[in-house]
Length: 200
Image 1: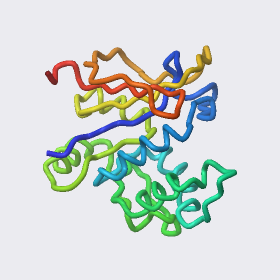
Image 2 (image 1 turned 45 degrees about the vertical axis):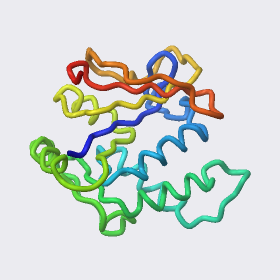
Image 3 (image 1 turned 135 degrees about the vertical axis):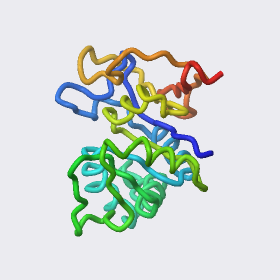
């Protein structure tokens, strides 16, 4: 059975983004990029909310074939590989009424499912062959998945900064079981890994 894995960066005080949804308060360093590349290499499907899909599909396609630039972290070899994998992997966007524009670079590898179809879609996907189902960003989506007991593993990449206010990572109380906690080599981030508390 395929696992559903969520990967997100958070601040030291538990925020998913800053005031107004600003993600640049997060410590999105090379260690964060390397962790997400490792997940993408083992993935068979990416699951996203509409907002994250629109953001990522406007950014990542530009990185895939860009020349490597040591002065620009976005154009690292890690991110260029991540972008190429993201381009080719099947993607599922959860949205009611959204249609992927025909000129979107990811149009041919993306399908949209409504919120009412999500449970059945995930059940079918988990029983299929291939790599894991991975969720990047999409906090509203994965909070709902946690509430529905659909998440198998939650990877939180926690940075060293507390920002005091912003968008909280968790929208409701949840109890998890710790799988691991370790510094990411070469990074000031810490990788925290959790599973549902009942999954002993």
